Length: 174
Image (cartoon, rainbow, N blue to C red; front, side):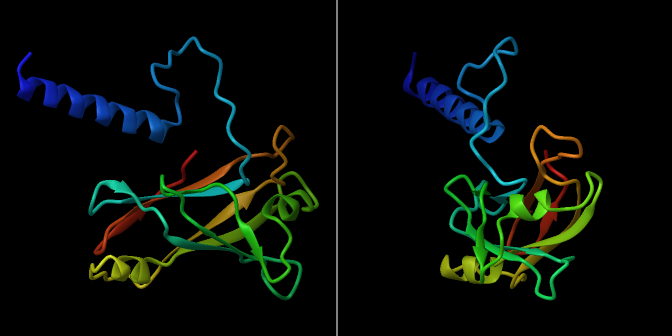
């Protein structure tokens, strides 16, 4: 096999490995294997991909805020995206309870709460020497259910964002 063909095969294998990581499947997985056990994560997570480079948006500061709250001050949480551009767990700010405990304390399985996740995009791009139109990107959404995994009314809420310095898009992930 010539060098250019070996290089092309290597690029294809690297690309496939990246797709497998994004799908959170082990390499060479088959449909007959048992489902993958996910690492412990909060009921609300996010994932950011940098469309400018086609890579995960690592080290991006993110804030999660409960917009509807029984207390006068909304619960706030902070995190920084990992090397894969993901946030699986949130750190409470100012004495807030954890995300799972807030959702677990809701009175009914079909209770609704409103949340906002804010990505500090301006400073993040600026640190890379890239001009950005967005100083921040905020996505607001409604969570239905108590967030107790395995119990009635439980759903995981995932907020994926495709982020560029001049555009962004989001959708309800799984």
